[in-house]
Image (cartoon, rainbow, N blue to C red):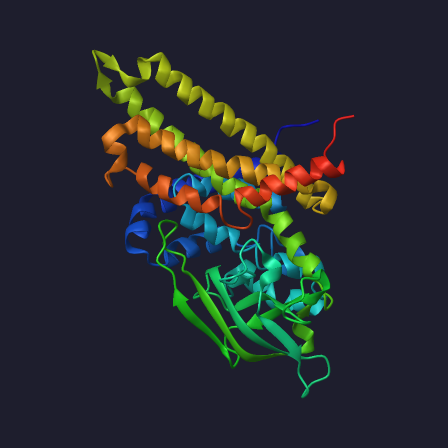
Length: 391
């Protein structure tokens, strides 16, 4: 069992670490305060070849896989979870296309992601259908004007990157809207410039500002048969896509926790109190130690999950291991950012320090792409079903 990264991944880690320090860290606070999309950061990622990490060379990517993207996101998230989200969006909407898309779909839509000429977003959630995915009401009905085409009507909400995207991976009911059968949901590629596609309201978020989150409205959108992803009745594709994303979301949590702990540790080493520094107090040292242990545990869980996903192991029997990484790393982000604020005291609550930003950003991670409670349910189901067992 080898716990060392390959030479190629070490080089990737070092190069992204430099880029994050040089390009992301100086912009992180401004991005949060203005909420403006950081085009310069996107272009830095493009120029560094980071937008195609998850894509194979045949599609214009580097073939670094989910583990490569996980490592890159970890470095970027030390300073900005908005920038980390930009990298995540190179895989979330493209995942179903990679898993089940036709060669034509892959060649048409994925090379543009790698070279930065196209951006994409992922539409699954609806106002009444967050964790309860089968409650979705967006519907696709056969298009009488085409053989195999569909007409999609409905809306999706909480879509990250909705305003910037050129195309969307959309899930809709292709059977009775009240059906809760898994074969009643299918996936489609919808282009932004098609008739009936529009961006509705955008959300005012507590954190992770700079990448818009909002609503996509679909008003009798005609989708040609060549834009159906996989087979009709392919709800399992949504779950496979999300399962494979668990380590990527977890990486955002690990990076945030690392950034928060490093910043707070530097602060307590300098801050004088009672004739010595705060770092000299054993109680403070123990808190730092506990957080450091959790960071390393989260990294081991996450890198293992990424390796599983890269090996195509994101079906039912591997879900508990993928969910563990997402659950533990994102909850750690909340704990670590809270600890950082506490170690700085009143100063940590002020905008003079990035700790309050990390604190706001962290909570999002426990909600997106499967809440912590959903992850616990999946892990428990793995134990109950014997997929996670120890004899």
